Amino acid sequence: MAFTCEVNNQLLNNDMSCFDSSVNEGPVYYTGINTGEVNDNIGNSGCFDLWTNEQQAQTLANAQTAYFVAIIIVQWGDLLITKTRTLSIFQQGMWNWVLNFGLVLETLLAVVIAYVPFIQTIIGTAPIRFVHWLPGIPFALFELFYDETRKYLIRRAARKPEFKLGRFLDEYTHW
Image (cartoon, rainbow, N blue to C red; front, top):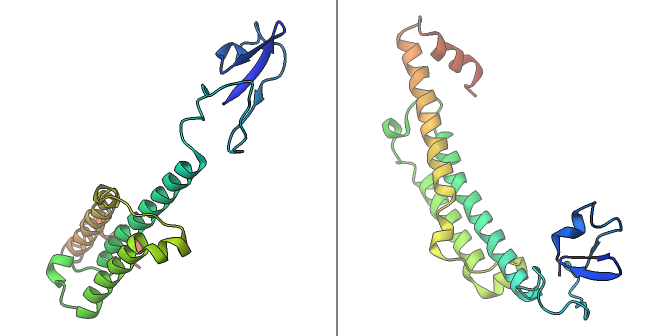
């Protein structure tokens, strides 16, 4: 149940005329939202009667786990772009095995948090499908592309001092 109102001594449930000031001059009551209480006058026709509280809690846990995994994936991009100040990741390579181990360990930790039942109970996560691991990837790729472009422009300014954009980026975005 989402809302009720009284118009001409008649109780209206989930009727949009409750919000029409020419029809309803009285208050609109929100009932049954996240309280778990059932309004016996309404029946089971409300828009919030679709899922039980357990189903809503499970959906919330899935969403929180997917958000956590997306943060981990974006951190991959952060790690790769902060690896060098001006060299491209393609010039530098991935020869730092401690860093590579950190990427793998971070990912394995996310897998443990998402899929080990005992940990799920403690932290409040839920298993997610593979497709829910994917939303963070475009953000990590965008971040990597942006920083590779910035580094290229900075390197170009080092070769050609008249290139003002690269000098600007070097001075104001170079950490």
